[in-house]
Amino acid sequence: MKKTLGAAAFGIAMAGSVASAEIPADITATLTVYQWDNPQIVASTDKAIERFGARYPNVTVVPLFGTPANGWGEYSNGFLNELATGNKIDLFATAIEGFAEIASKGLLVNLDDIVARNPDAAAVFEEIDTNLMDGMRSRETGELNYFPTEWNNIVVYYNMDMFDAAGIAYPSDDWSWSDFLAAAKATTVRDDSGEVTQFGFAFPSGNFGLQPWLLTNNTGYLSEDWKTVTVEAPEFRESLEFMHSVIHEHGAAPIFSKSGYQDDKFAAKQIAMFTAGHWPVPEVKASGLARVGVANFPRNKSASTVFGIGGIGIVKDSENPELAWEFLRELTGEVYQQELADSERSIPSWRRFATTPEWTAYPENSEIFYASAATAIAVPSPSNFAQMEEIFMRHLEAYLTGNQDIDATIDGMHREMTRSMSRVGK
Image (cartoon, rainbow, N blue to C red; front, side, top):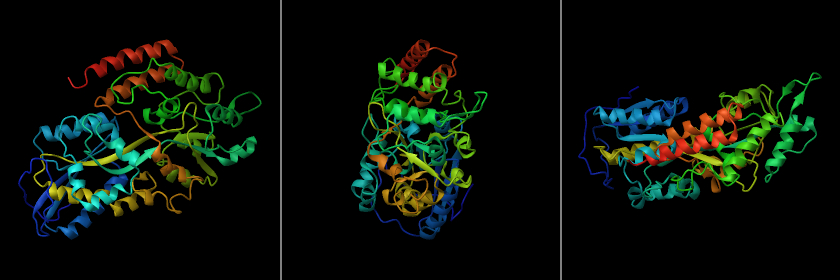
């Protein structure tokens, strides 16, 4: 895809810095932006290019779209391969899962330098929860290499009619794992032969969606600084055993499978609860389910959830870093935030767009989406994220499907994760 607003190339490399000089409206230049292939992002990028063209009619913006279908590691490799072949890229967009890998290679501008001398950028920070911004910073250098676009968390969706039919209360703001289990069991329905016709819950199949079962138990497979493997902690074992028990001991969830976030089963009225971010809202709404609520993730030792956030960075080798910054603003600013809100696929990073009466009207209690920003914890995303995710999910799937016991699961994770982490930075 290529949108031509002019042609040719312009600019003197500025050693990764972005000056505050006024950019002439008749500048002739080419900008290339690397983003992930997503219908909403593609559409919004097209619109941003048109807006940018009204300001700089002689600029050509070339969007390149990679796919994270097989993981963020593959997506990052696509970007690195473009650079390795000599292609010039000015802007790089990714999710938090890919932040560290690219930032660790020193390829991106430190945006703190820009924000410090740009009042408009500083004002944006007032719109975004501090916890989200902190989660975007490099754990190695403290630099801000990406400017925020959208984010997502994990909450519990529940069918209010099914809760009513079971005669149980809707989830409270501070419900516990035991409350959750009681609700999952109460909303599991069996026929006269004992066959389940409706499960109370279904686990998601991805790393991101499963993280809150660790975080709400004060654990994870990595330490807070993402450097030390912690799967041998008793809390980690407890979290895995609890998930296993919901399926195998209590029969309140189907056997674990790699089948997404289960929103299709929820829309088909086959399950009473599932967990996801904001992205399933359009499909759930289109299914005709009118009485749907969302609840905070149930807690065991602490109240929390996970968050992932997207961002766009400026490549240090850009020949037009000032111009790249101006286009970055189009890709993250007010118009883009409204488009995010309208799409309902993600949570806008700007608070005011995710707290309007229109955006929070469905599902019931949607105020909790942005409210969780203050306490949510960033999904563990070291520079070897792709390997760590693969190890975690492979062993967890074997355990939750009954093909591996808990000791073998934890031993396998610990051995492989420790080996992978030992190679980071080498």
